[in-house]
Length: 163
Image (cartoon, rainbow, N blue to C red; front, side, top):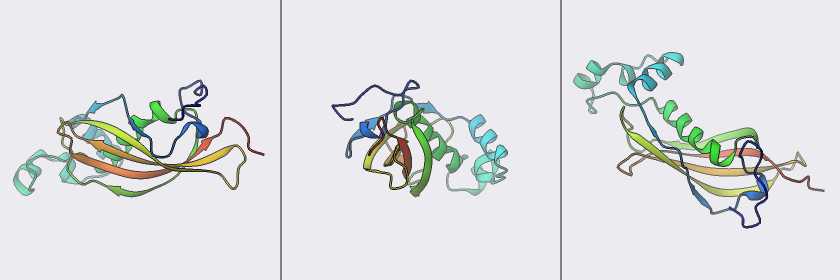
């Protein structure tokens, strides 16, 4: 982050001015994913895919032999892990997520850790109190396999209003 970084937001987030293109943040939080996570998320989102919720099906009819974590849960967890370090209290809105990939499977019992690279930033054309920051989030398993990544564009509060 920038050397001339001011105070963080009272909730802990960074302001637009604090982000430095090219910086990579290793997030402090890690998480072991569980069968309960998979079952609850899949059921709450009405996703009946046996690939996530049926251990017998997975053992007898898939190449994996066990349930895969629901990919949308993995995506949400990856981004969620970044919030405390980067954006809590300073995000105005998520503008989009692109290039979402899941290059390796994530299984129940795996633990993930996340990094975020600051890809770009610019002042908003439509709002004097905001800037656009593009993040590249990456989630890795305990074996350092890349299990998820996505580019996320966010509208962030500025510390000062540009004239």
